[in-house]
Length: 246
View 1 (cartoon, rainbow, N blue to C red):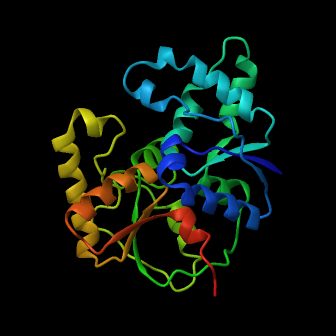
View 2 (view 1 turned 120 degrees about the horizontal axis):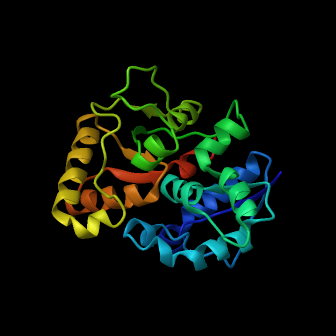
């Protein structure tokens, strides 16, 4: 199984350890992993701002870099959802359609494709899971609490396999953190207030870490935590799943 590692531009620039953890984890789980060096932004920020017509270059570059892989895996639900919904190429539309079906968020790939039964990792801390909106409502990584349906969480399912971890139950499991990509720029005050509310729920549960599948949401929450001088830290789920068992 040949996997192309798709790393969002902000992870590449600010959180390379998340990319490394994802790479190492996929290798541990038996995948042959390659990181195309010429990959760039998937075009999501432009599309979210109403300029999707300017993302054709991003689409072409994405197809050029990832078309040879059996699967494309990314530690970011929002970027994966963008590619699933918006990757097009008028000259290679059949190929683009095939690639849209072959791109996966990391936890989705581990649970649905690899169907991993156990993970050899240990994380002896109290942890809260932030369910990012794109992952939950777009990729269906977890059930929405407003629906009268059985609850599930693919990130939570994987974390339950980790030794010595204490995953807490939050009061509002799927509340938005307020990041929202360009929303946090255009509606800064609302974004910050939403983030503060999200942090308070984790604080009430006495967590050591907030984790999730989107480093962008965690980046937003981390900024609020640091400004409040909170001892709570943020960590991407890939780093927990890749943590040493001993």
